[in-house]
Amino acid sequence: MKKRWLTLAVFGMLSISTAFAQKQQKLFNGKNLDGWKVHGTEKWYVEKGELICESGPDKEYGYLATDKTFKDFELTVDFKQEANGNSGVFFHSSLEGTKIAGWQAEVAPPGSNTGGIYESYGRGWLIKPAAEKDKNLKMGEWNTMRVVVKGNNVTTYLNGVEMITLDDEKIGAKGGQIALQIHSGGGIKVRWKNIKIKEIKG
Image (cartoon, rainbow, N blue to C red; front, side, top):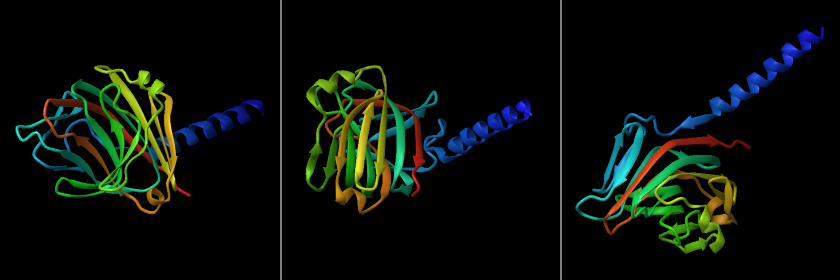
């Protein structure tokens, strides 16, 4: 009888684990840009299983946006900044060309508020991480960012450390696309991988 209960318990744990895994979606397949749309003339391409954004000759803003829209979710992404890494992860966004409305979890060089939240074509900076948290960014190395959006609340994590938490009714009022940014100015190159999302229901 004990063996039977042990088997059932293990089976139950595996079922829960499998259910969790099924809920987590890969947004980037490691092969091509299927499921995404390029906005602007900057470069977006896949190399050795990594998604790369790089400044083009126009040195303007560029975006790579998901075809799908999301509202409440937990997003994880690995990034490595080469040269000037000024970029970001937009959520609840909508685009017309390279004009983007929405909120950005900042990805930027040291001292430039990685993990903070900026509202594009709106109120600007809503919250910046405390200055001492900037040490969690590893420039030129792989970093993991996690963005959790549920209702009005947004929390960002960088390499396992909470960077900010924000309660904002405007964010909670809508959903939208996920979009990666390349900043204007030229000289920017960022590598991305392991882009995954888990939608939060209820």
